[in-house]
Amino acid sequence: LTHRYPAVTEDEERLSIPLQTMVLAMFDAVLVHIMNEVSPDSWHTIKMSLCEALYKKKVERTLEIMKETYADADVIFLQEAAAVFIEQMGATDLSERYHIFSPEKIDAKRDQNSLVLASKAKFSGVFSECTASAIELLPGDAPVSPGDLLLKWARRVRNRPVT
Picture 1 (tube, rainbow, N blue to C red):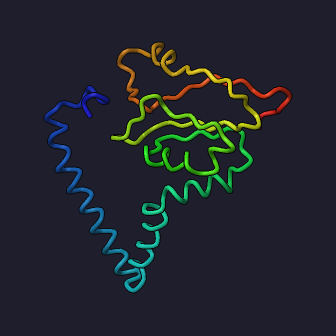
Picture 2 (picture 1 turned 90 degrees about the horizontal axis):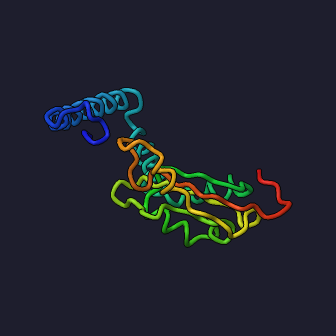
């Protein structure tokens, strides 16, 4: 925390963790109370179905949305992608339709990686890595961690408009 926010002292950071935990516990208690008052018989079932869709099956659902909703996209930009997501995406038919680019240094701990998918129908296989050059232009104290930034130069297939 002090790395990204230099104004926060180490002592403030140390003290903030138990305070944040207490505030989150109070917030959860308020939510449970409200749900017990509003919908005592069904709120937990709804919560479990949301957890299933948004957490347990997040990767599958995200890939499904990419394949269906964005099937005609020429370029797809993704942020804060987990390493496991990158791995699973490479095993789908998306890798047949798109050039998939991930950072040279994937951050599997923070799992906040930027990705670019470029249509194989619209872009040739000629790409250049530009991330390191862009990072060199940033000030030394810029809060950029591995995986945060991904830049590629791409050559379009001749006479193919990009949408």
